[in-house]
Image (cartoon, rainbow, N blue to C red):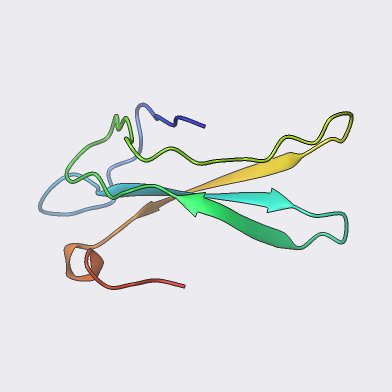
Length: 82
């Protein structure tokens, strides 16, 4: 998947938001499994992420995906997340 967004809300005070997307697949038991995440784009409300997310396609099975967009504060840009 290649991802982009437009007209995101500005959640920062001194600058524009620094968005990132995390993609999840909802399993049959309702649990969310993380499929991947994009890079953080600094000061942008209309991001076009470079990082692509790979999703295994299962023929004739409905795959529910959730896209969570986060505003990442600068102090966390180089901190690994789980």
